[in-house]
Amino acid sequence: MEEIKKKRGIMVCVTGQRSCERLIMHGVKRSQPDENGERPPLYIVHCVLNGQRFMNSPDEADAIEYLFTCAQYAGAELTILRTDSVQASLAEFAYEHDVGVIILGAPGEQGEHNGKFARSLQELLPDIEFDVR
Image (tube, rainbow, N blue to C red; front, side, top):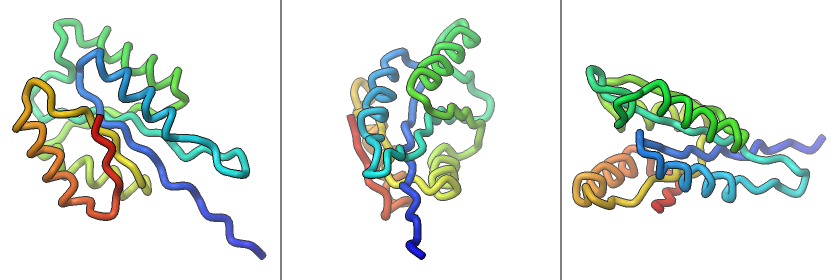
């Protein structure tokens, strides 16, 4: 009997910014169906340090609803995590969900800080492809 190989998931790391929709849409593009028409699971993950607001918006409920709507439109699962270590929690999520690709936003305004974040996450997950947009 032929073994069925499950496609590894795609994880899109988002923040509270509305520009994250472009990352989610890129995740949709990356999750192309295989020869059997099966798409890999698509996970949208927002991770926040304990004690901080979930979103960078005065109206968090609207911002969370926006992320949920984007994830729903993309056919993805939205997960919001609260943690003491963002990198460790994202790495744990990636391993638990058999993620093969992580999509992150480019450093942008916060440049060096975001670049260090991506590098430290890559060090925790050396076997995962990183797609920085």
